Length: 210
Image (cartoon, rainbow, N blue to C red; front, side, top):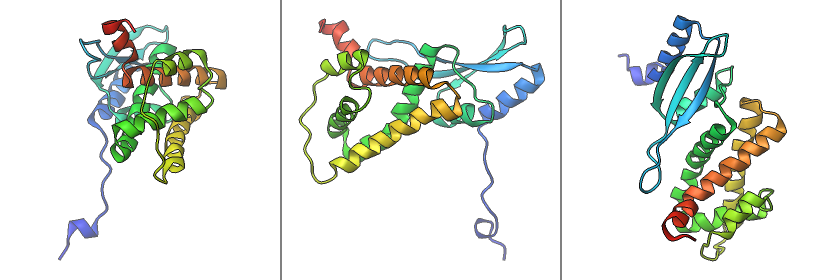
């Protein structure tokens, strides 16, 4: 007797938004695409991020827009479909990469817990190549975390974070194909955004003035 679970292989399932985007690009014959990440500031933090996919004509005018909630799977496709689709501006690319960084770090947070992760991440950034950058240093000086303790896994945990940061950085070079200087600028901005939001630096300043 045939048992489909054992006798067939899983069939790849393409995200419905991707199918729509591909169909729409063929239909309107868009020359190229750009991404715009959009989210609204709320009383505390931000609304969920949204991907706006912008379709451009040869004369560089937006002729169509498709929108969907931000998902890592969708953004991965935009980065890796053979023709990398960049964000509309460098500032928006920073936000996009910050979202990817947040998603990438969530398994570490789940594994070690919020409090310990906070200390790990601050140490990883402070001890790394971004630690001396003025904008990052100002953020670090505004953040206070509990002292890190080493239960025997500290080096391994820091390496895990470094590996995830390295993977994000390499996406800018190999997938989005930015030149090194631009990639570093975007990466620094993205890490800054993540730090700011994770540790509520701007929110605290808005509420308490410090």
